[in-house]
Length: 282
Image (cartoon, rainbow, N blue to C red; front, side):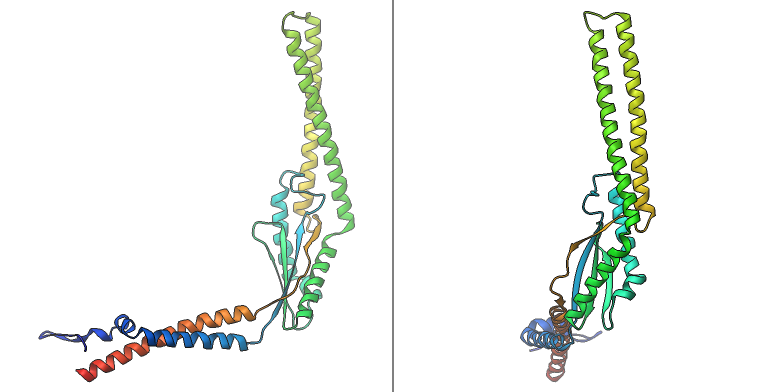
């Protein structure tokens, strides 16, 4: 029986016709319609043509050129990964490696030096072949041998400069310890102390030169990585695996949309039914 409120100065309001009240009273109908909508959505998603996506990953600066080798390398590698992903999408790699019916896309894994290359096609073999070809083409274009030789030479010079600085630092520490020892009782002669001070000064001078050379080699290597589009070697870190199908996501999306649409239809149906009943009883 409808709950109706009536006053002389107000219109009659049938509260059972309100959507929430109607849904609460007819929840079985709403649930059934929602479930039917979800099932129909899943069916539609199942019937939609599927696509296959193959993925391959390459990284900037893997191998002997580690992120701890030089100051500033991690940031440079992250920036280069972003640049290389844009290069795949906008220039030669996308055109040369993609076959008809295949969509190629590259993206940087956020805040990393890794590039994800994805090839999508209706055919799994085409997607796999395109992803592999794109990675091979990018690596071939980036890993120019002459630039890699310059990188190697600079890296070797950096290692040598680092060793020289380490040796110079150790000599400074040794001469400082010697001077402290000569100043402690029994106090050494003036000539001995002056000699120790001179040796310490020379060692500090050599340390400063070694540090300057180390900083110069670090700066050069960072510049090679930052300023040259092909300066950092690319390495394949994940080969193409089994392509993933879009069928599952199509079914999930279809089911979710069907559930939403079915729920809306159920609410409308319940509300309309409640209003018709209210009118009849009125």
